[in-house]
Length: 424
Image (cartoon, rainbow, N blue to C red; front, side):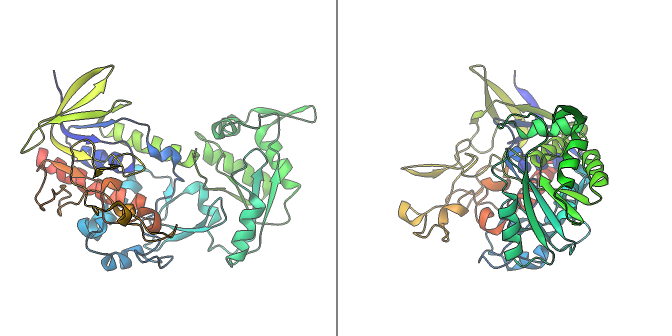
């Protein structure tokens, strides 16, 4: 027998989670299915709405003032500024430990590479690191975490002209953690304040870490660490370290695997569970039935294809990186519903010769009407009960614009709301 719901969301990334949450909060019966683990665990945890224009100009100060200047095919132009704002309102309510909602302007945050990133929402754990803050700053790197070179990052920030003195130091994390210890191992140790052995003496981990950093501190009022400062009790870890260091403590957003990304994923799944949606992960959608409209989809599970039916469907499977959009020698395609992906017939027109050129492939994705329903090659709606959200959409370059999270939230919100309104 088919598993039934009113709205079925396919995809467990930020767009899928937002779509499902938006639909579920209307009272609709919502089911989310996802093949892979959420990509959020590989993300920095920052929520970018629009950091740079489509022409590469920026950083953008006010994303909302810039949205009307974007090209017509851009997803923000499709859903409108109100949907961007309402989507972020939904996010702020679901993830209350984030900041930035008090203003329309982007915040500027240092990253692990020493660049300054414009972002609209950021974890509370990163708030003391704002580049607009004039207090002096020390970055602390860990010898075992080679992807964060604190002196290198500090030098880049200084060269960027930040309004404070900044320097970086590298220390060994106290105790006997293996050199290849995962970030969650550091977080767990600091969460529990477990004992570490330093010079033959057992000491609580937070006390030992603060004591080591205090030997390097030179009256800086802010101290930035890699994003490993706890998980379940991250706020308490930072507060304890701040007290021992007599300085504000913050986390520097990191690349994968990302604790801020994992925390964000946990918060969104918790909100979705509280809203009453059902969730299934680990099994792919492999086929569907329907011609004029989608009647059912099939989920492969233990060698069997399980039918799932719904009144409305949301496609939020990701772009080229997430395999929601794929290509071969025949062209570019969407693998579940075979939605049309506009693209040049000549593969050599997909990209530019320059590495950082204006590559056409970066904007590959489905084209939709104003209700986010995918269009076929003739400009007609493919299926009236299917909507698309997130990076499966075309018409924008999320990496160049720094707009991926914002587009996922805005289109996810709009797609989920529309689907629920049609279904109930």
